[in-house]
Length: 75
Image (cartoon, rainbow, N blue to C red):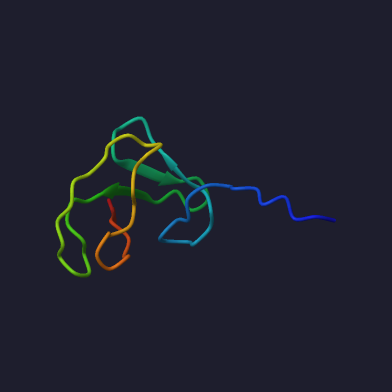
């Protein structure tokens, strides 16, 4: 059987399952598997690089452009 490459969604930083979904608030996400909530931060927690946040959920970049770390913070 051929691999169809189904994209289930973004990976949750907490449980590492592909069930991270945007909420109705801009820049906020919730994992439908473990129910943890996250928000996009403008500064990288690893390297401290500041970047502009795109609040559109379908175009949001969730990784740091400098070091590649997650820009999501648990709330």
